[in-house]
Length: 109
Image 1 (cartoon, rainbow, N blue to C red):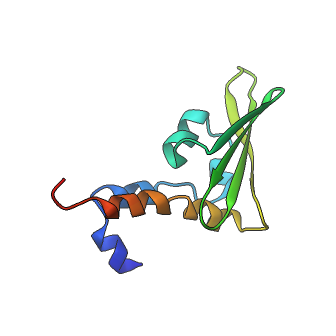
Image 2: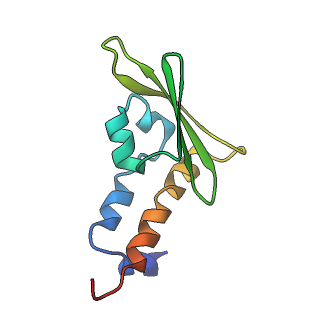
């Protein structure tokens, strides 16, 4: 892993390091923060006042539940990985596609 990080594009390590490392760190986040951390979700569903954002990685799927706060701003209330995955491992795995994309860029670009 250390060898791969040395090859990553400038700034890509910063985005990985800034990702939330626990469910608690993600709770209370707004959709803007969520999108900045993980990008757009694979699926966004609205169920009454709730929004469910679904992210996928090769390791897991991550369901993020947002509910409006007292001012009507949607905020992360719960983070639930599928297939019994560890939330921390699941969140970290979501950074891998960004790193892989950075590594795939040609040296001439």
